[in-house]
Length: 64
Image (cartoon, rainbow, N blue to C red; front, side):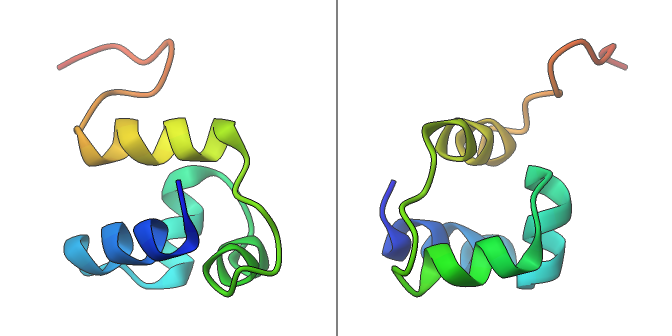
């Protein structure tokens, strides 16, 4: 996942960087640094973002 893809995903859902960080389980500073291209987006975050985008339940969570 690229910085532009992360930003596009966040904007598609209308999420702030704060909400995105909460949903992905990371810090707001990490989101800002990834979107700015300062740091590479970890594969685990890219996978989590894809899961959130597909509305999948977190690992171990019970489906309703």
